[in-house]
Image (tube, rainbow, N blue to C red):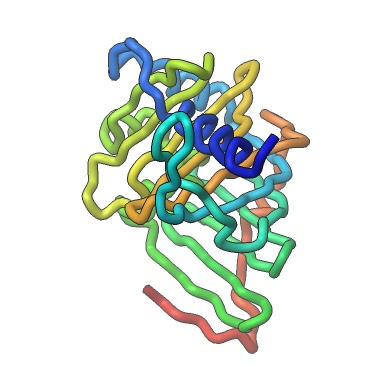
Length: 222
């Protein structure tokens, strides 16, 4: 198979996640909320890739955007526990730790010895990661929700806020477990996050979500 055809398949498979089914927004949101509510805690390994569109090319099927890798794939481990506890630990290609503790979000970069602290206001709470640990019932307030037409347990979320960090997000479940998230930003970049080694509704120690900035780290409050 030629490179062009391979990339076309990637584009089409990504587009499928955002293809809307004929299901009412209210029903789609209820189905998504039900799936999220079934998971009160979760741990998983993740891989994250980001691709950026290049100028369109002409194939037999017509013009389609080509995508090229923007950065090295990222991988690590994540944990969530409702309500409002979240830990996202990137191991490769560089270490980074993100911890949500109820009303504050910490981002720690060991290489820079820098900690960024953000208040979890409404805008920050709408980020994809915090969607997993927050109040599922707030989805209707913050997103327009549609069901995917090509993925049985797939959903498309479009933020109602104009200040959101992404334009659209696809969320895919398999056998009631979260498997992947696909995000599209205003520049057309596509970020795909895939989860494996998933463990749902197991006991997670609260200590895992505790974070105190290292004494020699620069702390920046935003």
